[in-house]
Image 1 (cartoon, rainbow, N blue to C red):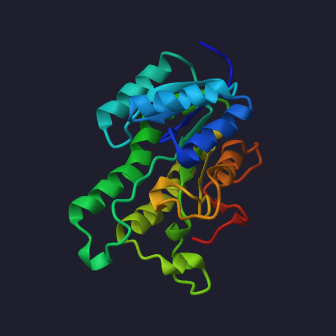
Image 2 (image 1 turned 180 degrees about the horizontal axis):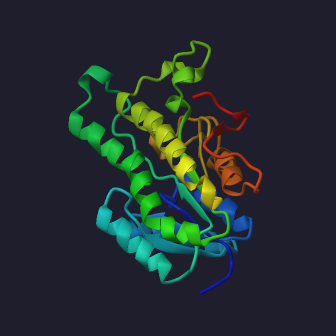
Length: 242
């Protein structure tokens, strides 16, 4: 057991998740790298440890009930509280398919990770979050999760038309607000953030921001002080429209 502040980042073996883990470790936290692939997860941990960070691997598949439950139990045996949870894990199946041709099984797979994943992870780790002093929960949203932006012809996000991914991120905002309302009396702040157009495997590395740049908003939300906001949607330029 340790009194050092603890953070868990899901999908943290690469991309934005890895950058978030690095940033929280730089802020002085013990960071648990959540990943479903043990080999990749441990490689990420080894990389961060070589940089001098206090990080550990936690086997966690956000789409699997048993995996999430086991991960919560495993972490609970290592620490008495969880100060930060970043629900970063996300997928997209095929960015080239128009809405009329989306296969229902693919849409369900996207929702299983992008929407139901954050719900089941947050629920499973809530006892540890409540045991912390004013914990922070960060949901990794997207600019395409804003109905305002995807219908604004001046926004880059209006050019994207991904039925499954977009709708999962729009729904995640509603999930964020619901958790924020329930957990505010416990001093737990819950916000959804969008990283900007980041170069990741998710988009074929087509973005113009680095993962480290894209991680900044999530890191800031994870480190909010007591008078910070809750139940909001934020990007690199501040509060974003729903």
